[in-house]
Length: 265
Ligand SMILES: [Zn+2]
Image 1 (cartoon, rainbow, N blue to C red):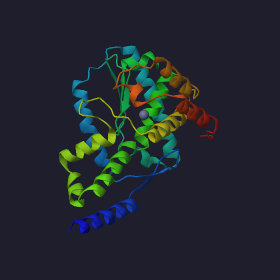
Image 2: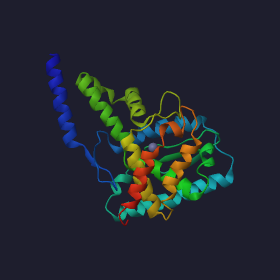
Image 3: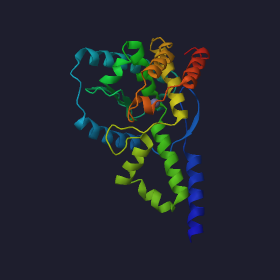
Image 4: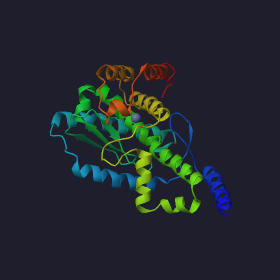
């Protein structure tokens, strides 16, 4: 019986893989997406509203204005580009919003539904519109490349292979789906504490983020310069941008190479 379940699980995985291939905008990388955009958006919004309930909104009007100004300019450029290149599906369900949190923590993240959160602390490093555009582009890239969905999909295939198929299919519902989402997106049990994306996703977000900067008219050379600044300012805090986005020579070299080989967008 157990063997039969395993065979059924394997068949289900093959069927899911065949039916669920996505292509990442800008890089053309094929990815496995087992969840619909609407499922991801619903989970993402639920998680974000929990976060927003307790997060203190910044009272720094000038910084908030600068953040929103950069964000809106990048969204406009990105949406126009994707629409005119037949890649609107990358935008499916996204509702961009920008929030500045009153906290000295050096952090920023983007929910899969397009809610972008900056902490005041990161503005010490991202202190010009070009540097803000580096972080903003990187975070927007995680959303349009559907990295949360991909990670959740990988996690469910592992679950599927490791246990009975019925459990996993049932697990897509309710609280279990939320915990799978947390795994996929990375919000831990503490709101706002993010697990890092894989190195592959980080590098891809760097590259796509740099492309978005370019089409929005920002200086792409600010991207490697920003990560160099981050190396210098490294802290030992466990839950901040430094730990989820480890900056090193390799990351900076990959970004410089991407700038050198960047196509005309
Ligand atoms: Zn990232």
